[in-house]
Picture 1 (tube, rainbow, N blue to C red):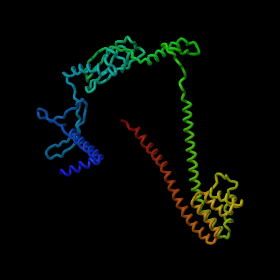
Picture 2: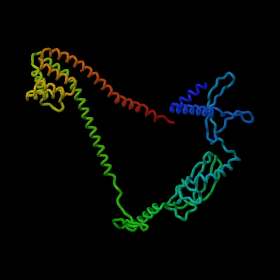
Picture 3: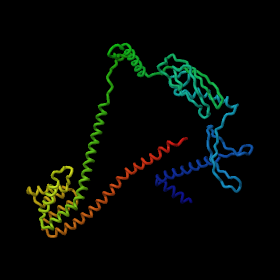
Picture 4: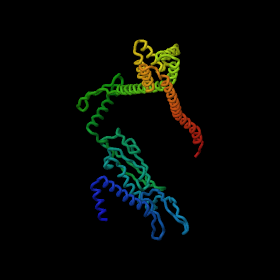
Length: 425
């Protein structure tokens, strides 16, 4: 055991983190044991007559004790809850409790004041004596100086002070007692700056009274011998508009960026959908004996012819538009192979890059075997089209979940709300 203890001690020294963890674990165990003992012992005691008793709460509040009980020797142990009411004063104790409560009351209501002989801040007129369940109600003889909650009315206060008679009506059950005392309420002691500002406000009020018949109010230029400088408070509406405008600009920028991103995704999806059709058309023209240029021009011209007279912007399909562009580039003198490769690069999708590179290579090597390549490419494109359709179907199903969930909430509301309001308690 000694060697083991030394090893553990050495390990703790070498690793401070283990030492801290061990201390925390030991503290948790010790605290848990103490709390368990405190919670589960001492609740049931025996009085002088040998009767089982439960101590009432020290703060005279009602409590509920969970007790385990077994009835008879063969009975099973059962847990029941026993309500234990707070201790009440008897007839001989209530008057003494009122006396002590009245003495405590004069200290409990002081708030930030040192004594009732000099009250310069609000009093805390409590409605219950803490821990004694004695209720308190108040009556004052000068409500123009202090309200029923103890808040001072500073406008009515002077440095001479005002004596306020305060009557506390103490009640416990059916018993009543009255405790009466006085508070000397004085004007709050203000800092020099606060006094100056109050004097300035009073001077402005007098000026306002004197100039009631004029179109303007004259502001004082000096107060207590000091020069007063006036200016309008800074309006923050311009800054609010600036912040709002910058926020809207950021939202527009983000929205435009998101819109372009969505348009890019839509165009890419559309090109993937058009790819099998383009490959099949191209393969059909090549098998019919056309050259690469002839097949390309037929597809591009057919698209131009069909889209003529329509709203070109709404019906625009990028893969075909880029084919038309490549057709005009070839007519303009750009090498045919370069035009095909540029077509794949402009489309920006691996399928079209592969298509453009395949045409460019076959143009240099000859068109032998091109039909087989196009046939395999058409099969792969068709499989890709099926996978894309399946993916789009899954996305559509996911998007339908939110409306269905909202509809479910509406149905619940239609069923539950009338039932809730029909319940009468």
